[in-house]
Length: 114
Image (cartoon, rainbow, N blue to C red; front, side, top):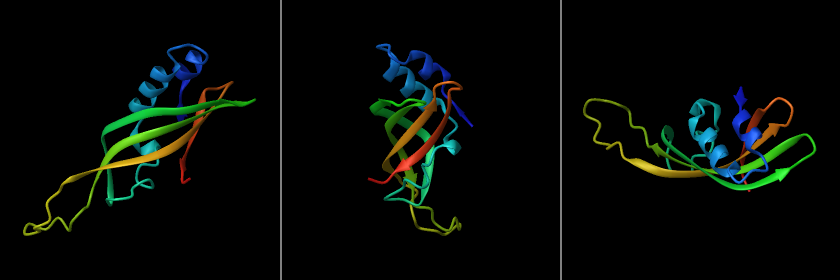
């Protein structure tokens, strides 16, 4: 479960984007659709996650935050001792939408495909 209470508390303040970005970057990467957002590699790495807030919509029951996620992926080989495939990191990017419940600060995240 994703809880974004700091971001919800910062809503309508000048610090909102910075607080939201920080909360996203501190999330457990397993809660984000990084693997599903891959376009150039086959395995998402989460050690270099960076977020950018694109837009925020104030809906009646939630805040809808569109964010861009920058991270890296690798093309996984067979992991054999004689596998000549180098393990190079490839830059990846995807956009997600966080819906933050205004009462509980619980959030859902979905991958945007448009």
